[in-house]
Image (cartoon, rainbow, N blue to C red; front, side):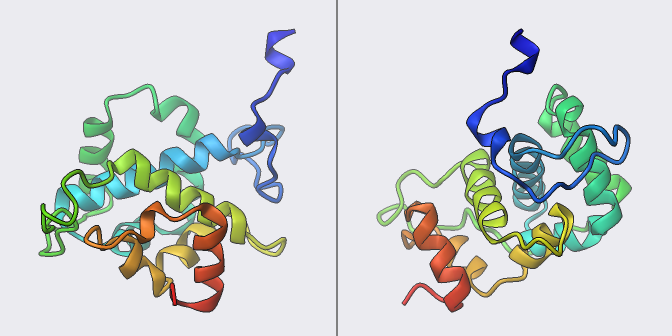
Length: 173
């Protein structure tokens, strides 16, 4: 049956984080990727760091959004970002990751590309003692986020295993 098939990404464990509305369903990589994408998209829109957005959403609401990700991804992402800005009382700041040197980075990564980078990092560093929301909050507070979000360098283009190693080292050196 088609419904019984799951993608390779879904099959990769997120340590059993359960959907809070459908406990028989686990949060999967696509749910994580969507939430990381929306954090990135919202942060870019309000010119704030990703950690600011994740912190204001908070653990419980991250679990809520992870649990509804398969529905939310069908909505217009601008509408979802607008709703998050209003619901979580997110304020405009001065942190513009898109303020880059066009000679160094003629085409910066898209919000969906960076969402995938962060989702992979959360997935690869998730411990068995934490749920996916804890992992999101932990990763967005890592010192390497400053390097990943500096599009004038190439840290975000590194392979996932290299970014994971840099995470554990605390830098890309």
